[in-house]
Image (cartoon, rainbow, N blue to C red):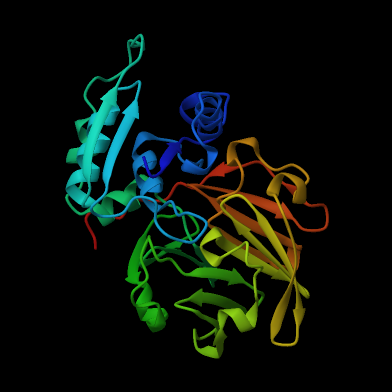
Length: 329
Protein backbone atom coordinates (compact mmCIF):
# COMPACT_ATOMS: atom_id res chain seq x y z
CA UNK A 1 0.00 0.00 0.00
CA UNK A 2 1.35 3.43 -0.96
CA UNK A 3 -1.25 5.32 1.07
CA UNK A 4 -4.28 4.72 3.27
CA UNK A 5 -7.13 7.24 3.30
CA UNK A 6 -9.40 7.18 6.34
CA UNK A 7 -12.57 9.14 5.65
CA UNK A 8 -15.25 10.42 8.01
CA UNK A 9 -16.06 13.64 9.85
CA UNK A 10 -16.65 14.49 13.48
CA UNK A 11 -20.17 13.50 14.46
CA UNK A 12 -20.80 12.14 10.95
CA UNK A 13 -23.72 9.73 10.55
CA UNK A 14 -24.87 10.72 14.05
CA UNK A 15 -21.74 9.38 15.73
CA UNK A 16 -20.04 10.94 18.74
CA UNK A 17 -16.51 10.50 17.42
CA UNK A 18 -14.21 12.01 14.83
CA UNK A 19 -14.33 9.03 12.50
CA UNK A 20 -11.13 9.52 10.51
CA UNK A 21 -9.05 10.19 13.63
CA UNK A 22 -10.54 7.16 15.35
CA UNK A 23 -9.73 4.91 12.39
CA UNK A 24 -6.21 6.32 12.13
CA UNK A 25 -5.53 5.59 15.80
CA UNK A 26 -6.78 2.03 15.42
CA UNK A 27 -4.57 1.43 12.38
CA UNK A 28 -1.47 2.79 14.12
CA UNK A 29 -2.22 0.64 17.17
CA UNK A 30 -2.19 -2.39 14.84
CA UNK A 31 1.26 -1.49 13.54
CA UNK A 32 0.42 0.50 10.39
CA UNK A 33 3.03 3.26 9.84
CA UNK A 34 1.44 6.66 10.55
CA UNK A 35 3.20 8.14 7.50
CA UNK A 36 0.98 6.01 5.23
CA UNK A 37 -2.27 7.33 6.72
CA UNK A 38 -4.08 10.41 5.39
CA UNK A 39 -7.15 11.72 7.19
CA UNK A 40 -10.20 13.11 5.40
CA UNK A 41 -12.29 14.50 8.25
CA UNK A 42 -14.78 16.71 6.39
CA UNK A 43 -17.34 14.11 5.25
CA UNK A 44 -20.85 13.78 6.64
CA UNK A 45 -22.21 11.25 4.13
CA UNK A 46 -21.05 8.32 2.01
CA UNK A 47 -21.24 10.52 -1.10
CA UNK A 48 -18.92 12.98 0.61
CA UNK A 49 -16.54 10.16 1.59
CA UNK A 50 -16.16 9.67 -2.16
CA UNK A 51 -15.98 13.38 -3.08
CA UNK A 52 -13.52 14.58 -0.46
CA UNK A 53 -11.24 11.52 -0.52
CA UNK A 54 -10.61 12.16 -4.23
CA UNK A 55 -9.48 15.72 -3.41
CA UNK A 56 -7.13 14.75 -0.60
CA UNK A 57 -3.48 15.76 -1.08
CA UNK A 58 -0.22 14.90 0.65
CA UNK A 59 2.15 17.43 2.22
CA UNK A 60 3.77 18.05 -1.15
CA UNK A 61 0.43 19.09 -2.65
CA UNK A 62 0.03 15.92 -4.74
CA UNK A 63 -3.28 14.09 -4.97
CA UNK A 64 -3.37 10.84 -3.01
CA UNK A 65 -5.73 9.09 -5.44
CA UNK A 66 -4.60 9.49 -9.04
CA UNK A 67 -5.72 8.01 -12.37
CA UNK A 68 -4.10 4.62 -12.92
CA UNK A 69 -4.02 3.75 -9.24
CA UNK A 70 -5.55 0.64 -7.73
CA UNK A 71 -7.91 1.67 -4.94
CA UNK A 72 -9.29 -0.71 -2.33
CA UNK A 73 -12.52 0.53 -0.73
CA UNK A 74 -12.69 -1.15 2.67
CA UNK A 75 -15.72 -0.93 4.95
CA UNK A 76 -17.97 -2.85 7.31
CA UNK A 77 -20.88 -1.53 5.27
CA UNK A 78 -22.23 -2.40 1.83
CA UNK A 79 -22.01 1.17 0.49
CA UNK A 80 -18.38 0.28 -0.35
CA UNK A 81 -19.66 -1.41 -3.52
CA UNK A 82 -21.17 1.76 -5.00
CA UNK A 83 -18.20 3.93 -3.99
CA UNK A 84 -15.75 1.54 -5.65
CA UNK A 85 -17.89 1.42 -8.79
CA UNK A 86 -18.02 5.22 -9.04
CA UNK A 87 -14.28 5.56 -8.50
CA UNK A 88 -13.56 3.12 -11.32
CA UNK A 89 -16.04 4.66 -13.78
CA UNK A 90 -15.30 8.35 -13.20
CA UNK A 91 -11.82 8.61 -11.70
CA UNK A 92 -9.69 6.39 -13.91
CA UNK A 93 -8.67 3.93 -11.22
CA UNK A 94 -8.98 0.19 -10.78
CA UNK A 95 -11.26 -0.15 -7.77
CA UNK A 96 -11.94 -3.16 -5.57
CA UNK A 97 -14.20 -3.38 -2.52
CA UNK A 98 -13.84 -5.38 0.68
CA UNK A 99 -16.70 -5.62 3.17
CA UNK A 100 -16.40 -7.35 6.51
CA UNK A 101 -18.25 -6.69 9.75
CA UNK A 102 -21.18 -7.48 11.97
CA UNK A 103 -23.62 -4.64 11.32
CA UNK A 104 -27.17 -5.36 12.40
CA UNK A 105 -29.42 -3.45 9.96
CA UNK A 106 -32.01 -1.12 11.42
CA UNK A 107 -35.55 -1.08 10.04
CA UNK A 108 -34.88 2.14 8.16
CA UNK A 109 -31.55 0.98 6.71
CA UNK A 110 -31.23 0.58 2.97
CA UNK A 111 -29.44 -2.35 1.40
CA UNK A 112 -29.32 -0.75 -2.05
CA UNK A 113 -26.81 2.09 -2.44
CA UNK A 114 -26.95 2.00 -6.23
CA UNK A 115 -27.96 5.65 -6.28
CA UNK A 116 -24.40 6.61 -5.41
CA UNK A 117 -23.26 4.98 -8.64
CA UNK A 118 -26.28 5.66 -10.86
CA UNK A 119 -27.02 9.27 -9.83
CA UNK A 120 -25.44 11.76 -12.26
CA UNK A 121 -23.49 10.67 -15.31
CA UNK A 122 -21.91 14.13 -15.11
CA UNK A 123 -19.51 13.64 -12.21
CA UNK A 124 -19.08 17.39 -11.83
CA UNK A 125 -22.80 17.78 -11.11
CA UNK A 126 -22.61 14.81 -8.78
CA UNK A 127 -19.86 16.42 -6.70
CA UNK A 128 -21.75 19.73 -6.62
CA UNK A 129 -24.98 18.06 -5.49
CA UNK A 130 -23.19 16.07 -2.80
CA UNK A 131 -21.81 19.25 -1.24
CA UNK A 132 -24.63 21.67 -2.08
CA UNK A 133 -23.94 24.34 -1.23
CA UNK A 134 -20.37 24.76 -0.06
CA UNK A 135 -18.96 28.05 -1.35
CA UNK A 136 -15.37 29.22 -1.73
CA UNK A 137 -16.35 32.90 -1.79
CA UNK A 138 -19.51 34.80 -0.85
CA UNK A 139 -20.51 38.43 -1.32
CA UNK A 140 -23.60 40.63 -1.48
CA UNK A 141 -24.73 43.44 -3.77
CA UNK A 142 -27.96 45.28 -3.19
CA UNK A 143 -30.55 42.57 -2.43
CA UNK A 144 -28.61 39.66 -3.93
CA UNK A 145 -26.16 37.20 -2.44
CA UNK A 146 -23.51 35.58 -4.63
CA UNK A 147 -22.08 32.15 -3.82
CA UNK A 148 -19.04 31.08 -5.80
CA UNK A 149 -18.63 27.31 -5.82
CA UNK A 150 -16.18 25.46 -8.06
CA UNK A 151 -16.75 26.80 -11.59
CA UNK A 152 -20.00 28.71 -11.08
CA UNK A 153 -21.51 31.70 -9.33
CA UNK A 154 -24.94 31.08 -7.81
CA UNK A 155 -26.92 34.32 -7.38
CA UNK A 156 -30.07 34.47 -5.29
CA UNK A 157 -32.30 36.82 -3.31
CA UNK A 158 -32.39 36.83 0.48
CA UNK A 159 -35.32 34.39 0.64
CA UNK A 160 -33.86 32.14 -2.09
CA UNK A 161 -37.13 32.35 -4.05
CA UNK A 162 -35.21 32.52 -7.32
CA UNK A 163 -31.65 32.06 -8.51
CA UNK A 164 -29.39 32.29 -11.53
CA UNK A 165 -26.12 30.60 -12.42
CA UNK A 166 -23.16 32.00 -14.35
CA UNK A 167 -19.63 30.73 -15.04
CA UNK A 168 -16.82 31.88 -12.76
CA UNK A 169 -14.67 32.82 -15.75
CA UNK A 170 -17.19 35.50 -16.70
CA UNK A 171 -16.11 37.47 -13.61
CA UNK A 172 -12.59 36.12 -13.25
CA UNK A 173 -11.15 35.18 -16.69
CA UNK A 174 -7.78 34.36 -15.11
CA UNK A 175 -9.33 31.35 -13.34
CA UNK A 176 -9.47 29.30 -16.52
CA UNK A 177 -8.15 25.85 -15.67
CA UNK A 178 -9.32 25.86 -12.07
CA UNK A 179 -11.15 22.77 -10.82
CA UNK A 180 -12.05 20.90 -7.65
CA UNK A 181 -8.53 19.45 -7.77
CA UNK A 182 -6.88 22.80 -8.56
CA UNK A 183 -8.97 25.36 -6.68
CA UNK A 184 -8.22 29.06 -6.22
CA UNK A 185 -7.91 30.44 -2.69
CA UNK A 186 -10.10 33.47 -1.98
CA UNK A 187 -8.88 35.82 0.78
CA UNK A 188 -11.57 38.29 1.85
CA UNK A 189 -10.84 41.96 2.56
CA UNK A 190 -13.23 44.88 2.93
CA UNK A 191 -13.36 46.13 -0.68
CA UNK A 192 -11.14 43.60 -2.48
CA UNK A 193 -10.33 39.93 -2.67
CA UNK A 194 -6.86 38.48 -2.87
CA UNK A 195 -7.26 35.51 -5.20
CA UNK A 196 -4.43 33.00 -5.23
CA UNK A 197 -4.22 30.81 -8.31
CA UNK A 198 -1.70 29.45 -10.78
CA UNK A 199 1.25 30.82 -8.82
CA UNK A 200 -0.06 34.40 -8.60
CA UNK A 201 -1.84 36.56 -6.06
CA UNK A 202 -4.29 38.92 -7.72
CA UNK A 203 -5.87 41.81 -5.87
CA UNK A 204 -9.39 42.10 -7.32
CA UNK A 205 -11.93 44.89 -6.82
CA UNK A 206 -15.29 43.81 -5.40
CA UNK A 207 -16.92 46.75 -7.17
CA UNK A 208 -16.08 45.94 -10.79
CA UNK A 209 -14.04 42.69 -10.54
CA UNK A 210 -10.99 44.32 -12.12
CA UNK A 211 -7.50 43.11 -11.25
CA UNK A 212 -5.85 45.97 -9.36
CA UNK A 213 -2.51 44.30 -8.72
CA UNK A 214 -0.76 41.04 -9.50
CA UNK A 215 2.35 39.45 -8.04
CA UNK A 216 3.79 35.97 -7.51
CA UNK A 217 2.28 34.29 -4.45
CA UNK A 218 5.72 33.84 -2.90
CA UNK A 219 6.28 37.60 -2.98
CA UNK A 220 2.88 38.25 -1.42
CA UNK A 221 3.51 35.76 1.39
CA UNK A 222 6.39 33.32 1.73
CA UNK A 223 5.44 30.23 3.70
CA UNK A 224 7.96 28.14 5.66
CA UNK A 225 9.36 25.11 3.86
CA UNK A 226 7.21 22.85 6.03
CA UNK A 227 4.00 24.35 4.58
CA UNK A 228 2.50 24.77 1.12
CA UNK A 229 -0.56 26.48 -0.30
CA UNK A 230 -2.42 23.23 -1.00
CA UNK A 231 -2.96 23.03 2.78
CA UNK A 232 -4.91 26.34 2.79
CA UNK A 233 -8.58 26.78 1.87
CA UNK A 234 -9.50 30.39 2.59
CA UNK A 235 -8.76 33.43 4.73
CA UNK A 236 -9.55 37.00 5.63
CA UNK A 237 -7.75 40.25 6.42
CA UNK A 238 -8.51 42.22 9.56
CA UNK A 239 -6.58 45.48 9.70
CA UNK A 240 -2.94 44.52 9.19
CA UNK A 241 -3.48 40.88 10.10
CA UNK A 242 -3.98 37.99 7.69
CA UNK A 243 -5.70 34.84 8.95
CA UNK A 244 -5.51 31.76 6.73
CA UNK A 245 -7.57 28.64 7.49
CA UNK A 246 -6.80 25.24 6.04
CA UNK A 247 -7.58 21.57 6.36
CA UNK A 248 -6.19 21.31 9.87
CA UNK A 249 -4.38 24.54 10.69
CA UNK A 250 -4.56 28.33 11.02
CA UNK A 251 -1.70 30.48 9.69
CA UNK A 252 -1.16 34.06 10.86
CA UNK A 253 0.72 36.83 9.05
CA UNK A 254 1.18 40.62 9.28
CA UNK A 255 1.11 43.19 6.49
CA UNK A 256 4.42 44.60 5.27
CA UNK A 257 3.73 47.09 2.47
CA UNK A 258 2.07 45.24 -0.44
CA UNK A 259 3.01 41.88 1.03
CA UNK A 260 2.62 39.90 4.25
CA UNK A 261 5.17 38.39 6.61
CA UNK A 262 4.50 34.97 8.09
CA UNK A 263 4.16 34.98 11.88
CA UNK A 264 3.08 31.60 13.20
CA UNK A 265 0.99 28.45 12.81
CA UNK A 266 -1.73 27.26 15.17
CA UNK A 267 -4.89 25.14 15.04
CA UNK A 268 -8.55 26.24 15.03
CA UNK A 269 -9.21 24.68 18.44
CA UNK A 270 -6.57 26.97 19.99
CA UNK A 271 -7.06 30.13 17.93
CA UNK A 272 -10.85 30.32 18.30
CA UNK A 273 -12.47 30.37 21.74
CA UNK A 274 -15.18 27.80 21.01
CA UNK A 275 -14.41 25.97 17.78
CA UNK A 276 -17.40 23.70 16.88
CA UNK A 277 -16.72 20.03 17.57
CA UNK A 278 -18.52 18.97 14.39
CA UNK A 279 -16.11 21.11 12.35
CA UNK A 280 -13.22 18.88 13.28
CA UNK A 281 -9.76 20.29 12.62
CA UNK A 282 -10.79 22.97 10.11
CA UNK A 283 -11.83 22.55 6.48
CA UNK A 284 -13.53 25.97 6.33
CA UNK A 285 -14.22 26.61 2.64
CA UNK A 286 -14.93 30.37 2.66
CA UNK A 287 -14.75 33.44 4.88
CA UNK A 288 -16.91 36.55 4.37
CA UNK A 289 -16.13 39.72 6.29
CA UNK A 290 -18.91 41.78 7.86
CA UNK A 291 -16.78 44.91 8.48
CA UNK A 292 -19.48 47.08 10.05
CA UNK A 293 -20.15 44.37 12.64
CA UNK A 294 -16.53 43.29 13.20
CA UNK A 295 -17.56 39.76 12.30
CA UNK A 296 -16.77 37.06 9.77
CA UNK A 297 -19.12 34.44 8.36
CA UNK A 298 -17.41 31.08 7.98
CA UNK A 299 -18.71 28.48 5.52
CA UNK A 300 -17.95 24.80 5.81
CA UNK A 301 -19.56 21.79 4.14
CA UNK A 302 -23.14 23.03 3.63
CA UNK A 303 -23.10 25.03 6.88
CA UNK A 304 -22.19 28.50 8.11
CA UNK A 305 -21.41 30.19 11.41
CA UNK A 306 -20.78 33.80 12.46
CA UNK A 307 -17.47 34.61 14.14
CA UNK A 308 -17.03 37.70 16.35
CA UNK A 309 -13.45 38.87 15.85
CA UNK A 310 -12.85 40.71 19.14
CA UNK A 311 -14.22 37.91 21.29
CA UNK A 312 -12.92 35.08 19.07
CA UNK A 313 -16.25 33.33 19.58
CA UNK A 314 -18.29 31.42 17.02
CA UNK A 315 -22.07 31.40 17.08
CA UNK A 316 -24.23 28.34 16.49
CA UNK A 317 -23.55 26.43 13.28
CA UNK A 318 -26.55 26.59 10.91
CA UNK A 319 -27.31 24.64 7.71
CA UNK A 320 -26.87 26.45 4.41
CA UNK A 321 -29.90 25.28 2.45
CA UNK A 322 -30.29 26.70 -1.05
CA UNK A 323 -32.26 25.52 -4.06
CA UNK A 324 -30.42 22.97 -6.18
CA UNK A 325 -29.67 23.93 -9.77
CA UNK A 326 -30.98 20.69 -11.26
CA UNK A 327 -29.55 19.84 -14.63
CA UNK A 328 -28.22 23.32 -15.46
CA UNK A 329 -24.55 23.25 -16.43
